[in-house]
Image (cartoon, rainbow, N blue to C red; front, side):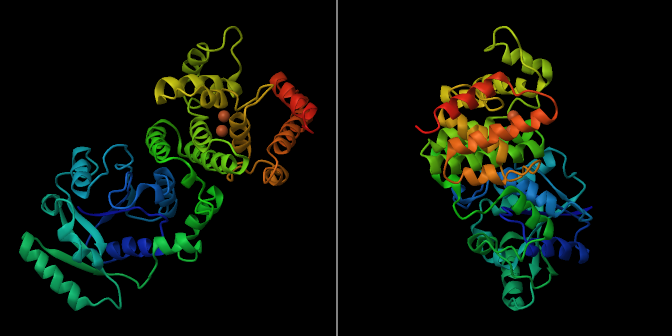
Length: 395
Ligand SMILES: [Fe+2]
Ligand SMILES: [Fe+2]
């Protein structure tokens, strides 16, 4: 089988990417296409790339109904940036592609002129042939001449296929926040998760913390469902925004927020065993259990030492009487991150524009009301936290 390999940051995935995939399949030069969103980027400054699980799941959403095409997570691992030659080798090693298949590396004609300066081009060509897209308006003569040059230098064969003239560029889409050139599914994904916001909150975390967040994202990617990971990243971005707004530490808030649900999908017994290390006596029920379990798991599995971060994880479901600013931010961001749509959160979100305590009071009251409708009472620690905030309101 002839397999097209199409890698990229896809930040965001746009119609130009889609026309590459469709064009390659329509040309019959390949039978199917494996799309590989980059994990650790090789050539772009890491800070400017959207956290990789966002890009992975966005690409998956874009291609979910696309025939003869699959999105592969082979680069969703932490470590050295994955060079093309290594990725191709790993595709074979991990049997995503069989030895009998022929791999074709797909790219736009501009890459023909850069290929010689790529990392280990000869290694790439040991595993794959080159398949170049030609867009209307591109100087085909120049591209074909360059292809002849590469064929001579590397003793290879370059194939071509035609694509539609969609001229979209991710960096322009990001810069202008205009999403006309992305598939509808991607537009929806961007809106749901609040991506590409102008204030780019994660720019406020330190370089070291950004690397830590990226690293944890790769671990979480393999430990939790896509839905929960997207939720966790949304909480991370929103908590960082609140940290900047309310003068808290962006590093602490981002870290606690990203890991706040890290134990939620662990087996129940494991959660109980983890929680029992810090809770002596009564072990809380299923809904709350993952918070103390998460604090222990964050320490043991993710190496978090900062007690303020661990506390914010521990208290993110029910709060505690006297909350730190990090506790409050993580609690609130968890309840109102952009993909939450279970209730009308507009009032809480509005309060959170400029008054953290007022937002928290509003949030507690909404929970109290919803519990009340079901004939239930809120947890006594939440009650204490609410009472404390109300008593100290004017201070
Ligand atoms: Fe939670
Ligand atoms: Fe959560």
